[in-house]
Length: 343
Ligand SMILES: CC(C)(COP(=O)(O)OP(=O)(O)OC[C@H]1O[C@@H](n2cnc3c(N)ncnc32)[C@H](O)[C@@H]1OP(=O)(O)O)[C@@H](O)C(=O)NCCC(=O)NCCS
Image (cartoon, rainbow, N blue to C red; front, side, top):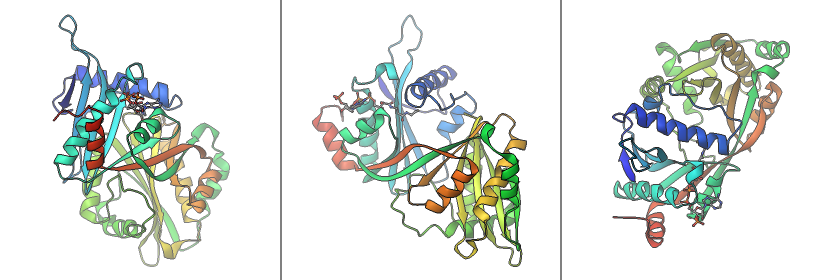
């Protein structure tokens, strides 16, 4: 019933069936989130950055009358640097029957065999997944807050003042699709600023601090059906990138965009850059993506300046988003002890 699965070669019916389970899980766990669409879903599941691998398994019902059974569970592990990042899902009607544990056992054993010692996972606050991972010995390492802004509630007049409220000597530039090639060096330098800041998170998402990695990462985003939009603050005297903010509109849920990194380089803080870039971004998104209704973002709870700016823009804190980690050998041991891991 649980088998390794490759989204690249999966049938369209399997992709559709997985989508049904994803949407049933959203309806149960995150009812205010938009339902996903089958738009580049296969690519979303299959594509990775160079040097990374994603291995997937599904739980599928037995076929009846020659019709393939529904996909009622899914897990993948993304082998990323020195950590295996998992994402697991069981249809709400099939939960508490040991399926989640069975899927996790597959992914944990493979991660162990691949020589990784750590598994990390993003766990959504206020959902059964918290109990699941805690019951299996995962430890909470880091917490962010997810905030959501509804475009219908934005005061566009005030927002326009914010977008113009940047100190002289800086200008904002907007790049749908990602920064142009000639800006990539300066862009990567700005991103490298935050590279060495150890804020305690597990680095569960790929980050790009050099021009080639950035190029690869943009290529990967596009292949996965995720359209990036960038606003840059340029320091006019030096031409340096003083700040940047990145938003992605995913084909899978195009009414809700994800605000990724926002960075203001240390020497350029205190000039209104964060607020102005994000305000400008909202204007650009409104023009470029007429179907867009919401933007969501994630912030460390200690990042008070950014939380304050987000609140001024109209973002409302919604729920915790937690990173959990576990030692792989210990997890495999624990699952073996409960009798679910088959060699
Ligand atoms: C987390 C998840 C995969 C667990 O799947 P599952 O098949 O129900 O898990 P299992 O039956 O293997 O549970 C294993 C153990 O976890 C713990 N557990 C799981 N769900 C729990 C819950 N709701 N409350 C308390 N403990 C729970 C229990 O200790 C359980 O063992 P037990 O049933 O013998 O007591 C499932 O709840 C899920 O898909 N959640 C949604 C994931 C998500 O983040 N969705 C976001 C939208 S896509």
